[in-house]
Image (tube, rainbow, N blue to C red; front, side):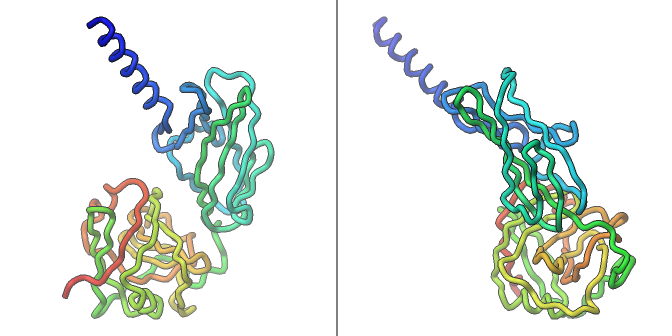
Length: 266
């Protein structure tokens, strides 16, 4: 009997240890423990502010410093890698430069006593204020006889209506269409696999909360849920529609989604 109890205890300890050594998440920041260790992990700071989310926005042309620490480790060899160097470059010391509008993943790699652990953050570069805006000020939302759509965020359906612009019609032809979007402070944003056509006279800067927009030059599909009061400097973009539910419904969503866009049942 004692032998069986001892075996059960050994198995329990083994299972707990196996769970602990898997991937750990610290807030929304992915942290991978060093191989064979349950304690080593990477903590990131940008300009001395802890990175608690996996998305960080910065204006085009700006430079920021990433600092890396490995708790309970005094010495660690740190290297940095950018997956999109033309959008965000990063130096050997962790200073990154926002070059142009887009999204780039920065990975910090720490080697401690021959073991490796990583931390990462997505840097979204937003354009700086431009003086040659095609149409300054807030856009007007005009939708007549639009096309109703449903956008599936997992089990949550966000209804909307697309207008009759050249850009919206091109998207409608692609439906059903799936785009991967990520949540930011002002929108859900994802890069489309194909560029959409647009007319120059449809371009504008800024948005109204609830707008569905196509960002010119970057092929962003965006659903703007917040920030209209400070949006006049951002663009250029083309409005293609609007969501038709309460803003609180989309604002309550968190994280990343593969959003299926399809025609609503008539």
